[in-house]
Length: 456
Ligand SMILES: [Zn+2]
Ligand SMILES: [Zn+2]
Image (tube, rainbow, N blue to C red; front, side):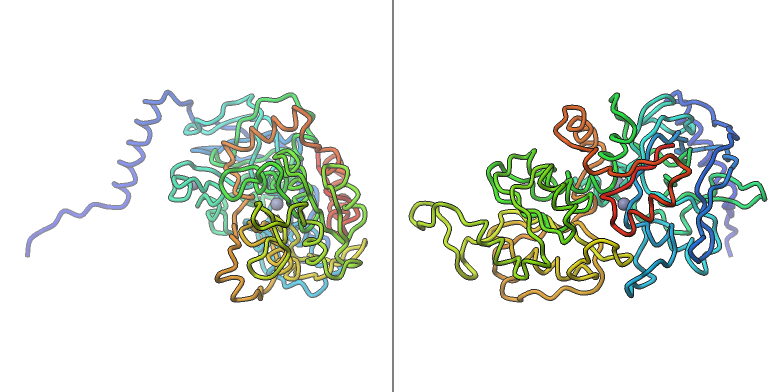
């Protein structure tokens, strides 16, 4: 029997670390940053409705590709309502209403202390030794969607699906800070926006060069605004063409950003659909040419087809007729942005709290040859006509963040804000300092505001 030399795992790790240290020296990177700052953060622990409390934490040292961002503003995303506020007046929503990135660990049975919040804007305060994308003092968007630039999806132009996005489950998170009793605290989505400091990885940050006010910047850089602007203006999915007919189904901050994106892209008809009158009013303010109430207009699909009719119905002259599977009736682009209710709203009810009806109607109101872009978080399964699905000529685009490629597109969206093409104030209808976060999140949960921005 030949004697083999065994190589221990320790030796391999040691040699790999030496190689990494060598490459770090090659790129002239800084030594590891040791910082033990104290900061305030909303920490979510256990179940129940009082799971989230404001705590003073001590930051752990950052290393590797980690960096610390001093938070200027963060959006209180509706998708995190359950994780932050717990079981409110919930209309049968499943516990798995999927708060993003590490949320379940903070729910019942999850023992970890987590700072929720999956995005924000701020100033880089410290960087780990391997960080190259940004440096201390840079203003950055901490994007809810990362972009590594080197994974399978990023290399195929689908940075909205960057596989680092999946590397934020409970087992991927690392402690970023400690509570005064020594409890380790983790950051939701590797971001933890509901705090004075965010600890994230460089894949999640986009440097931005602007003097915009923090709340406005926090709005346009939020996951919802990026998704709405992405779904309408990014080349990834189905960018809206000038003089086209666009429907936006659901006018939360994402849908209202899609309305604005459609306007910016030059759509001639923008039909916004929502049961909440205040949201329809904002839709008209930011660019919708028509609004529909799906509760009053029971047949919104038919109404959209009527509104989508064009002056020219002569088939020999490029016109559309209104009929059937092969007709031209309907919108050229439909942006679906409804999604499921996390709790029953205190304003007008949704036509369907699961969000499925909105998905079906979005598909049905699209013209043959048109595009359906879905962006929401619905609950359940969709039933659509098999024949239409198979040969109806409608193209469905599904993507994270509306297909936005963070490094390419977020600076463009900030430019739209700076040039006053994007109206952030119309959407950020509640702006609160850190201590007002819980009250503001309840407004988001009950839909009594469009969305809320926490400044820190
Ligand atoms: Zn979000
Ligand atoms: Zn990637």
